[in-house]
Amino acid sequence: MTVQGELALDGLPARLFACTPTRLTTWLDCPRRYRFTYLDRPQPPKGLPWAHNSLGSAVHLALAGWYRLVPSARTPPAAGRLLDQAWMHEGFRNDEQSAHWRDRARDMVTRYAGTLDPDDEPPGIERTVATRTDVLAVSGRIDRLDRRAVDGAEQLVVVDYKTGRRLLTAYDARSSLALALYALAVTRTFRRPCLRVELHHLPTGDVVGHDHTPETLQRHLDRAESVGSEAAAAEVAYKAAPDSDAASDAADVRFPAQVSAACRWCDFLRVCPAGSSAHTPAEPWAALGSAD
Image (cartoon, rainbow, N blue to C red; front, side):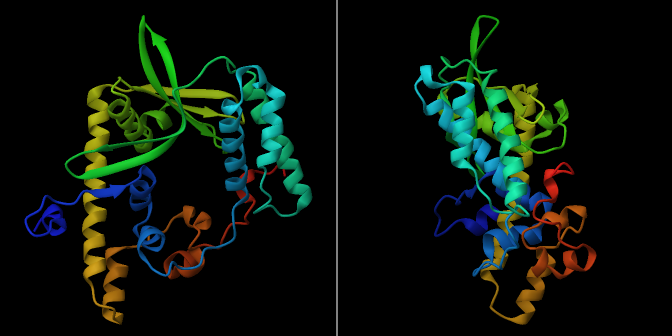
């Protein structure tokens, strides 16, 4: 029986697999982490909060808040003040480290805001978009949706903010399943073409982008449907299994751990025997870099 057949009830149309791009990429990265995150109830305990997540959340909140100001108030210093208001201390080694990275994050958003047009009104800020296919009901929230004039025609551009230390390349924008799904969802939500996706790296000010074609977006969509079908099939089997030790062992087989160096950053490393036997958890502030 197909996944769709398994999900159909009493002759009704098959139930679509509801997901976000993050849910799909979690399945790709590690099915075991997928199970811990989305299926196991109660959810296994997570590790300590991450400092880089606190920094990234504060930056995103500050930039979203900046666009909610009236245009005359959208100044670089205003972005810095919003960063201070949004700052989170979770995950940092101590107050001194937190204050150091708050200052660096304030510099990031202040410098970035200086490159923005305060009179521009993007059609979407922290906007949820969604689309459906024969397999998926996918939704997600985009950081910003820009309106650009290209060769005399208006097009929409998906903008994603990045605050990590890793330098980005055009490949990151081109290969991103999430950005491609966002572009498709924007096209169908706004009924206007959206082919360009961009990553804005605030630590360096670099912007890397990619101009998709309908064909490249379709390839990403085909991949997303394939991933979603795999995850849906695993969920059906997981939910249908009896509550027993044998069923638990079978779930471990169906949701294998993908052991790699990335395990050090997994929220569930401490409860994953495969990952914890190979790696020790990273310090909660380790992803910030050496200049801490």
